[in-house]
Image (tube, rainbow, N blue to C red; front, side, top):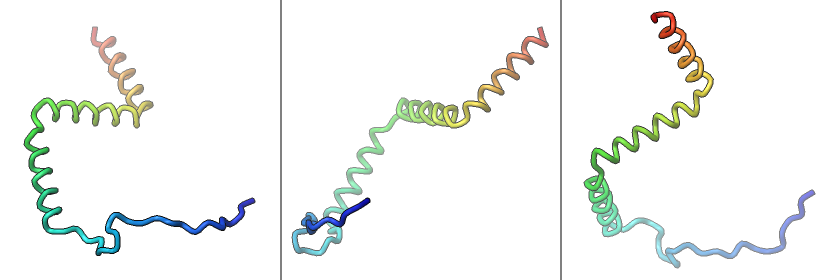
Length: 80
């Protein structure tokens, strides 16, 4: 059972009465920040990102990965 609240929401945005649009200066600083962050990325970051992606894919498909590993082990044992 829910009861309506008698308290009115009292919050303000950070624009404090000004338009909440992004300024050109803020947009420019954001662009500079993104370029700087992109330049810091190197091969190790790509490798770690790929490893994280592979781990996520394996976690999403646990049964499929287990089946593929089982089939691979079975195929290798038949070849020997």
